[in-house]
Image (cartoon, rainbow, N blue to C red; front, top):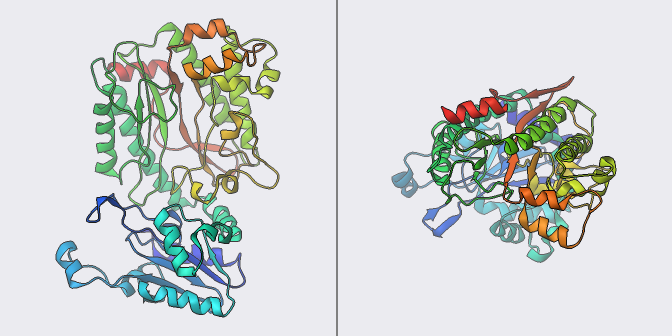
Length: 462
């Protein structure tokens, strides 16, 4: 945990957005893997962590604005718990660690909420993302589970997003630590990218690093020679000379802040001429996009700059043609980069995505496009100091998408399908870093992980 004053200040700041009611923050519970006593690794709810910091299952934080009181509801550990888990803190001690004055048994929470509802007090809560929490909230609030969605508090969502989007110094330090873990993960992956190595050998090694100096990986690692599949979690391929290994992986710090980095490495230590041409286009797009980052710039404009550079590079290779501004406006480039340029990061690798992407990455002046490719952009609104997000352009040759568009003669004025066929088995390239918006510009977080083509080759040969 941070110092308890951090959590007190966060809750006090949140209170400024409300005049009355109850702010309810259920923590996560243990989740059974294949039978009740064998659970998945516990991960606390991020909003509960942000405001209350207690990293123990079965807790609920509550802010009673009407009475100006804060509560921690949870379980008092028994002697049976002590036998299996060792000595455990009392609930009142846990409350004290986060600066909360009042603590109550979790069994009293429903009664407490019922009394508040009788007084016509508005109970604000965030959208649950686990099925058991939908049932739990439905029981606590006496609501039909199928109607619970209409009861989420938009006001609380907006207040939490506004607050959590701006990272404080102690949060940035945690993300920096997570990127240091990522440095060790990715340089290890580069060194291991040798012919005959199985993808899971690398995936296991980098996950071990994340567990040894952090809290494990921040998401399921993508370690694949088939980088054209954007979220490829299969790790069973044997690497061979000439393959491209896409490693998209990050770690959690001990306080659960995330990193998310991607590097693409030539197996055997040498890019082919064709691979290097595509790699340099992606790297140029990323560098130019990062150089645009500063307060008040719309991230959708950063995205569009990156894809225009990609379109220009592909045009020089004969893969795209015609007026490139028109091609990008129409969305023709999305054959090669069908995803958005980046997403917010923090306590979640896709920060606050459970609250709704449109709340996090969009606002009243920036609306989501419905165009293929651009519609996947998770962050489009104006950038503000304290935002932390990814910058991850890529170029991919997805055979199934190529076949579909070619059969439809889609964007035939902008795409040279005959030339594209020469790249059908190319795979994909992505390069990703984590960026902080400063008061005057940007900072690339963490120790620089090799990404110049020559440097990547050198690490892959080492």
